[in-house]
Image 1 (cartoon, rainbow, N blue to C red):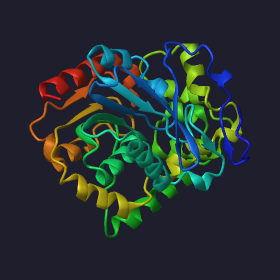
Image 2 (image 1 turned 30 degrees about the vertical axis):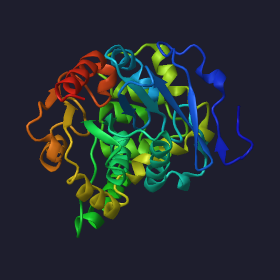
Image 3 (image 1 turned 45 degrees about the vertical axis):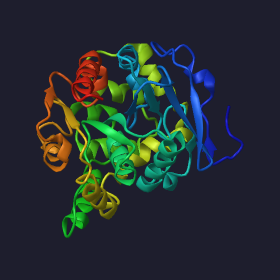
Length: 325
C-alpha cells in the first residue's frame, strides 16, 4: 500500500510475494514518522544478534544466515534501512543524508531497548551502525565488521577526499551496468546510481557476488523498487560516502574507548575494499579487536553474505561462543 504522503512511498506488499527462502514474519517500527521494517527471529529471551545491510541490498541478504543463528540459540534482528527493502521510501533525495540514516537507526535501537547485544555490519550497515554504537556504547558488547569502512579524516584530507570522489564520478560519465560489470570502481558505481534511469538492482547484486544468483533471487533484490519513484535511497548513498567527516572522526574517537571484543571478516575479492587496509584500521583502532582471530573470507566478493553465508554464520556463532557471549 502506498502512503498518502506523496513524498513517502511504501512498496506494495504484492511486490514481495513468493520471495525465495524468505519465510520470515515482518515487524514494523515508526521512526520519525517513517515505518521501518525489520525481522525478529528466535526466542525473545535469547541473546540478540543484529544484522545490518548496506546499499542497495536489504534484509533478504541475510536469509541463509538467520536460520543458522537461530539454531545456535540467538535472537536475530535484521532491519531494512529507510529507503530500502520493506521500509518506507522518502522520495526526496535530500532526505537520505548520512545523518538522517544514523538518526533513524539510533531511534530504532533506542526503542528496542536492547543492551549488550552483538552485531554484524557490512557496507553502509557499518558506516551507519558504527556511528550508532559511538552514540550508544552500551548497545553492543560484541561487534563483527565485514566489507565496510568509516572515514577518520581531519585537516586537508576531509576537504580533499570529497573533491577527488566528485571528480571520479564526473569522469565516469553516465556509466551503465555494463560499464560497472567491466570495472567495479567507485566512479562507475556512483555514476551509475546517479544517472541511470532504470536501476537494475538484481544485476548489480550479481556483479558484486561470486556465486550465481537465481532469477528469483535477483528479482527479490529488485522487489523493493518497482519503478524510479522508489530510487532515492540507493541513488543518494554513493554520493554521500565522504560526507560528515567531522561526525565520523568524532565517532571514531568514541569507538576507541569501546573495549568489547570485535572481529573483522573481510572478503578477498571485494573490488572496493579488498587489500586496502580497512580491516587493519578496525584491528588497530578498536581495543577489543586486538588478539582476535581475524580472517579473510576467500572466494567472496563485496556481498560475502551471498557467497559464503554458512561459513560466515558458523564463524560468527563460534566466535561469539568463544568470547562467552
